[in-house]
Each structure stands twice: as C-alpha cells, then as structure tokens.
Length: 207
Image (tube, rainbow, N blue to C red; front, side, top):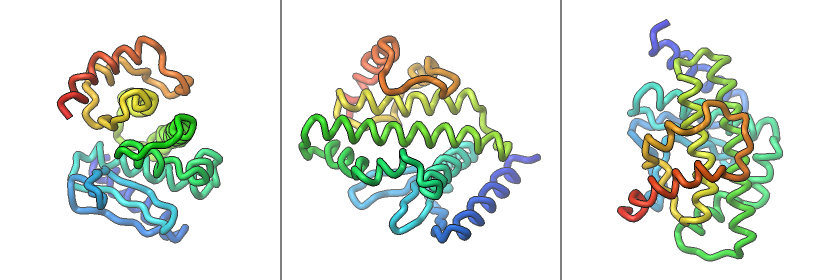
C-alpha cells in the first residue's frame, strides 16, 4: 500500500477515536507547534481541555510517529493509566517546565517530577510500538526504539544539565541506543550516560 494511504487511514482512525471520546483533533499546517513562551512541539495531547494536535508540514514518518505517540497519550488518559494519573496528580511536566526555565524547587520535587514524566513517556512509547504494529505503519521499529530510548534516557540526563536539548541529540548517540524498549530506564547505564556527556556537551554549550 502506498505510504500516503497508510497516513490517511491512520489519520482517519485517530480522528474517529477523538470524536468518540470528545477530544478535539487539530492538524496544524506548520513544521512545529509553538507554545506561548516559544517552546516548540511536533504534537501534543492535553486532557483539559481534551485536544490532540500534530504539525503536518513534516516528513510522513515524523507525522505518523508523532501522531501515534500523541494518540497513545490519549489512550493513557482513556485507560486511566497510573502513569498518566501520577503525571497529572503531581503536575509533573508543569514543574519540570518551570524548573527548566529557571524556577527553583526542592531537589526531591524535581527528581520526582522528572521520574514521573519519564515513566509516563516510557509507557507511552511502548504503547506506540504496539500501535505501529497494529496499524502496519511504515515505520522501522528498531530505529523508532532507538530514538525513543534516547528520548527516555535524556530525562535522566536532564537532571544533571537542567537543559532540554533532546531535539538536537547527535545521531551517534541514537545509533548506540537499544533496539527494543524492554529495559529498565530508571537508571542510565554508565556507557550511555558517558555518551550523553561526551556528545551533548558541545550542543548544550552552543545553546
């Protein structure tokens, strides 16, 4: 089946699911979605108000993977996943976002918030793999797992650097990541942490 048909079919599926669960579905005609403070996203899912959005002026692979990922955040919300509920209860992402922007919190609050966000994202990525398989999306599973692994591990690295530069992660880091999401991401193996320290230093210094 041509790639565009997979894309169109999956968009229709997500649109139907959004309608069924009273979630507003937005396709943003841009390369990114910009927040009020200038932060950019490929897509997002909000539970209050309930809305799912993705930027569409990207490669089909990026559109499909982002849409699948954000849809899986929606399934966490629908399923009342403990990962998603914990994320909401502690306002974890809000705390992390404010901390990255210079606001200070107790160390235990920062640690708990980052860990909660990380675990929510890991559960979402594992769900995304199943959705890719279920809908036969033209996305390389092993490559997706490597990118997802770098994304999850970056949360641990972020506690050290207090910066969010994940989108600029060098390919050499991604190429060394696991090709499955079966591992324990609560602690970063020394070899992987050393990779981040070595190859992300210049990226962070350059800003």
